[in-house]
Image (cartoon, rainbow, N blue to C red):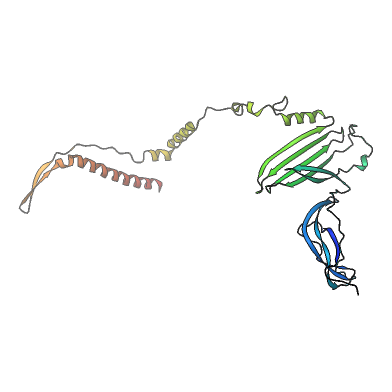
Length: 315
């Protein structure tokens, strides 16, 4: 029976608990037949292991006072530990570099461009038309202090025929809401460019250069189209005349045309009715009030006549 006194230290240091920052080392382990519990803080730091980020806890395993079966597969053994967090290390097929932002330097791992085994031994720039182009692209995402992100994508294309290498580096900065704050692309060349590549590179840098189409600001809008003698007003007037000249237009244009006239009667007289004499003065119809009333009556009659004539014409 092993001695498993409570609180007896088993192992201490930094424990690698994997890729998940929300993970943790095993809480209960079996150490030589004695149960041990983990006491410590996490996460205590991180490092890149074989090209992948790992997280570490700092603490120790101490016996709990109980025993355990060391052969039980459900109870893990004591994990390995280190005296400190190891240095970053990229994978075998990766290149290791650093980026500095906001005063902090971080390690980045970029996959190496694989060689073409079918073209082994051929040097760049031999102008071999059978040598294929090679390309590679890497993307690095960095979280800024304001919870925004900086994404840098580098694309490299090497011309297999002449060894020319074109590198495009695109950097995009976004705020905490995911909105793009700035974005730009930087293009660099190495090796000898072909005439077509040199012309394209020149035009990308300066659209106003010779053979690149010219500066857009110097293009006159008057040369984009040839104006005609027609105007909007002329087209509408012509359409109106065409409609009025048609049978339907003629009927609509003169379907209710009337004329009238006359003078004031000046009638005077008297009528005896039931032993009472009533005088009639025709001048009342010549007053200004009567003229206004006649205008109203004429307007009402005209509206009725227009409505009836339009109904007859349409039906």
